[in-house]
Image 1 (cartoon, rainbow, N blue to C red):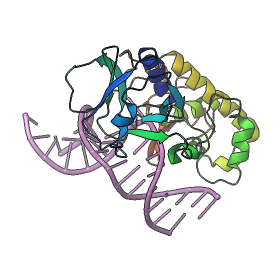
Image 2 (tube, rainbow, N blue to C red):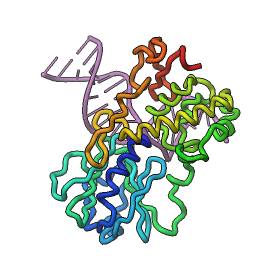
Image 3 (cartoon, rainbow, N blue to C red):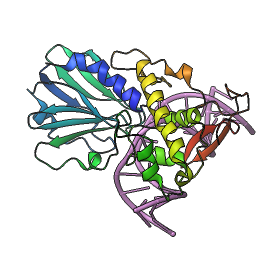
Image 4 (cartoon, helix red, strand yellow):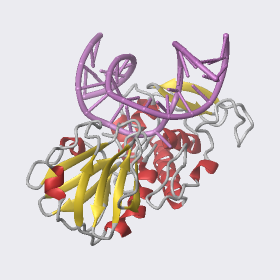
Length: 271
DNA sequence: ATAATCACCTGCTCGC
DNA sequence: TGCGAGCAGGTGATTA
């Protein structure tokens, strides 16, 4: 489900409902997510007041005096603001009950998501320690990609999806940005020129920013914290369109697999 | 160090 | 209508 735009959309959707709220109670129905939810998490959170919701890569971070709550949505996770007491479905694993009478509910059918705790004073959490730059910052640019990619034989798409290189670019937006930049996804990362990496960095920023403005991409049932769907799916040029005509040149789009992930591109527009 | 594969888990779609 | 195969927005761990 969520790539960076969906996580950012979720952050913006839930933050107004959480800000200033006291946490009354944490209910964990299923602690077995990608990693177990810490058994003492409720004790740490109860009575604390939420100040803000931050995002790093695809993690949502809620800082407190004694540490930070870390949330990850995995492939199928979502967060919703709902009234306390609403009956829980099969995949509603966690509720964070607030003083307002509402709760933040974490739902995740595949359980690839995570709910973790970073204690204050501990070294940066291992999951956050080796992440690359945020794509929507100046640090992420063509020169950076060019330098990091030298002598690499892996496909440029795999390189772009590596969180140690840059965070937040998942399968949908990697496909879309490479199409927009006119670069074949299976080209060796080390053989793409500095100039073309400049274009790629620009297109990554553009496609992510546009998607955030549209509220993310809704596939299946993704919804933001306010329950509204995203509208970016209507603007996808290649993702999910294998075999269909390229919207630029009419050539049927080619679908291959790179790193076990579905990869779609136009043989005529991308070189 | 880099690249490829495996693994985690459920639900849905497709072909027979 | 039922059933197995394959696929899905992520990413750490393991293997060459």
